[in-house]
Image (tube, rainbow, N blue to C red):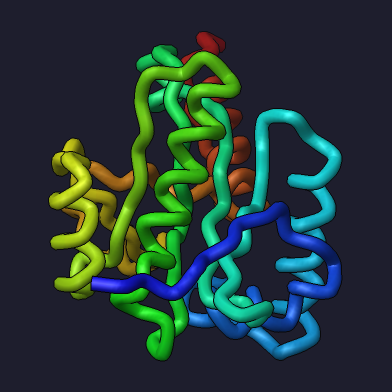
Amino acid sequence: MSRTPVTVRAAEPTDVASLRELWSDILRKGGLDEQLADVSRVVATAAERDDQCVVVAEVDGEVAGAVYLEATTFTPLNLESAVLAVSPHVFSQFRRKGVGSALMESACRFAEQHGIAHIQTAAASESRDANRFMARLSLAPQATLRAATTSAVRARLPQSRQVTPAATSKQRIDRVLAARRIRREQVPG
C-alpha cells in the first residue's frame, strides 16, 4: 500500500489557526479569540523550551495533524522520566495515510533525544479508532483519567465528610457572646 509522504516539523506561529481547529474539542470552552490566544501561547512556550515541542505533520504542504510533546515524569509521585504525547490529532481527511504514525514517530525521536525510555499518551475514551491505534503501538492502559466540576463532586460527597464552611461574622459574634456568658456564669461571686 502506497502512503502519501508525510513531513513533520516544529509548529510555527502561522500554524496557530490550524492547530486551534484541530484541537477544538479539547481546548477550554470560550470564544475563538481566547482559544487562538491559548494555542499561540502553547506554541510560543514550546518553541522557547527544550523539554516541550509542538509537532505538526503536513501532507502536500497542508497541516494534517499535530501532537504536543513534553519531557516530564510518569506522575508527580512516580518520578521516572517519560515523554507525554498530548492530543495526537489528525484531521479526518488525512486519516489512514500515515499521519498518526509520523506523529508518534516524532514522539519516539523526542524521547530518544532526551534519553527517555517511556512514552505515554491519552486518547478520549469514546474515540474507538484512537484507542485501537494506540493499542497497536503497544501503548497499554495505565489509568483512567476522570474529570468533573468541583460543584458536581462536592454534591456527591457524603454530607458528614464535607468540611463545614467558615462561620459568618454574625455566627462568630454569637459564639464570642455565648463564651462570655458562660464565663460570667462560672465566676463565683
